[in-house]
Image (cartoon, rainbow, N blue to C red; front, side, top):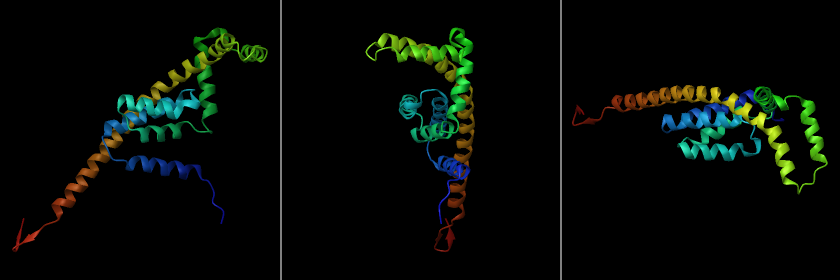
Length: 181
């Protein structure tokens, strides 16, 4: 029998694994917020490194951060992130708004030597500027929301585990010399 890839089942299993993690609810929530933030920014080749770095800087849970990063930024959602980031960023950079201008800049790059770093950097910043600004602006609200949602969820799970542990301990009675202790 051939195994099928079921994206929803895979996502559900990843979420369940994240929920089973134990630790400080605040650290776990910080990891979730950072993972969502970095996952929504147009920094594709550096997502994992940035998530780990930011989680270590603010003492967020690295595993939760990486998991949220992968859930938010995957091959199905990346084109949507980049398109939305470009649209929002182009509001702040009106001189680079049209795709014609971008294609013109890319044609300029095809005639530039790879050793001419100033031309490469200038063209790259003109294209990446709107994309980066738009991505950061888009990522702020979902990151904040995911932090607070994850915090509430992890606090509730922590309390439920504590109550279950307390009830298990209190329900066990030790019989010593015929009396309950």
